[in-house]
Length: 135
Image (cartoon, rainbow, N blue to C red):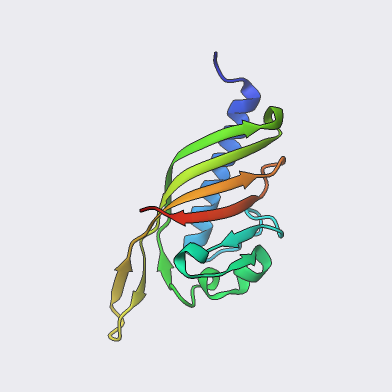
C-alpha cells in the first residue's frame, strides 16, 4: 500500500522543520518558527536541566555562550502518525560536532550523537523535544 498525498506532504513538512532547525541552530538564528512556546527541553541526560523553549532560547546553549559553534546534522527520520494522522511521533538520529576554543583561541571539537524523539503537534509548526545520548 502506497502513501497518500497528504501523508507525503506531512512527511515533507516534518522533515522541513528538522532542516530549518539544524540550519538556524548552527547560525544562532531565531527558532521561534520551529519550536512552540510550551516546548519542553530535557537535557538532564547530559547534565543539563529541563526547561521551556522560552527559558532555553535565552540560555547559554541557544545563545552560544557555552558552545560557540556547532554543525548539526540529522538522518534516519522515522515518522509514525498517530490518531488517524492528526499527530506524529518522530525519531531521528542526530550528529552534532560542536566545540569550544582553547586558551589560545584554537577550536576544540566535541562530538555527540543523539537519538531525538520529537512529538509533533497537529499543525506541525512546533516540536516537543526530548533527547537521549546514544550508548
